[in-house]
Structures are given as C-alpha cells and as structure tokens.
Length: 157
Image (cartoon, rainbow, N blue to C red; front, side):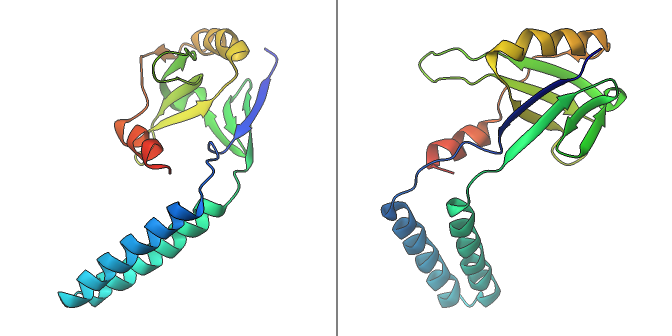
C-alpha cells in the first residue's frame, strides 16, 4: 500500500471585525463586574484571563496540518494512530444543501479525552480513504459533527 498524504488548515479561519472584539470585551467586563459584586474574585480573574486568551486565539492564523495514511496507521503531524487503536471511521462527503457540509473523515479512537477526531479531507480522497480503512478491517460507523461544534461555529468561534 502506498501512503496517502494530504494537508488541511487546523481550523476554518473566520474574519472577525472590531464589533466582535467589542462584544467580547463588554461580556467579559460585565460578567467580571458581576462576579466581583457577588464576592467571587477568583472567578472574575478567571473570566478576564479567559477573555484575553479567547481574543488572542481569535486573532491567531490557522496552521497547515499534514495528514498521512500509511501501513502503520493514521499520522497527524507527528502523532501516529495505529489502525489497531482506531475503533471505527466515517467518511462524510460534502453536500451543498441548506447548511453546507464539508468533506470530513471521522475517527473514533481509544482515547479517553476527545475520542472522536474530525479531519477535513478533499472530496477526491473520500473513496480512497474509505477503501484503505475497510481493507484494514476498521468498522465503518456513521458519525456526525457534535452539536457543540455547530453552535460554536454559529457564534463565530
């Protein structure tokens, strides 16, 4: 088997205008002030720090991540997920409907934290990825993007 390589952005970049950052600042200041009024100083500090970090990551440009399917497993950057540690997979092919869906490879791994990994793929790779995973005896199980991810996308994150 030859290795299959592709790359994709770490996340879909969204343009945020000044109004988004003003709204973030107003929400953080108001909620921190409410925390101070109620005597919860630690939570107020936590809110301010999280607001600063959220603003920082909102400005950060996404990295390009390299993916590879080879004889040993799925490689994401430098981390290898061996085929024997992958419980199931699902290849979602993009279909422009009311809400546009993107072509995505979903992997259910044995990890405790974030067991389902979603990986953007090109439409042209979908059949080849599905063939490779099935030849490695990995179960095909329908998976979808989690509701929280869709909510965060609507909110502009």
